[in-house]
Length: 254
Image (tube, rainbow, N blue to C red; front, side):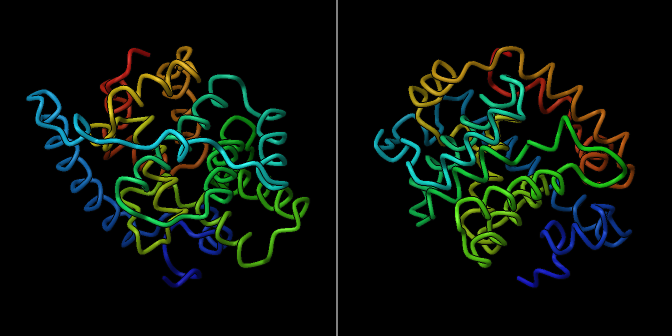
């Protein structure tokens, strides 16, 4: 992956402010079509009680957040910045991403994934100007990484996972942290691949980290972001991705 030119990386985001060129918009719209198709097939399997999650098992120990200077610093930063609704979403994002990684046999740095999950939306409610909110989140992550003594390479991995997470169809080629952060967030926001997760695990995640009106909160926050950064990925998801409907139809009560 070319970090300077690949849409969504921290280098690309800093260079463009998160605004898409015409060719990038066309490519992401095609990715959106693939995501919608996969979501439709998965949701049908769920309705027919043929989904893989019915018989899936994820060892609970795999879902326990790691304890390290990085994860403690990320937790402190997220707790200071995020309202409870988004903080709970961040914890669920980690749990769902980690679970999908376990089911897919993906070896991931759990500390980086947890830090990325806790920090990925820190910019959503505080970003200003015309830059994509994930750049603000990435700056918070940089400060946390410095505090924890993270290497330059690990810091870039953390920041790119955050800036890339709301691109449609993030693939394993982006690296395990970016892929599983996007997968975990997608499961919680729009129900993507929720059919692959054990129902009891989904219920436990919501019990431990209640949604507390998440759908309504997130729809409004996303509308504000799309209006603030016209031509960005949030704008693209609302205009071409039926994102408001996808949030409403996610298989969670609120």
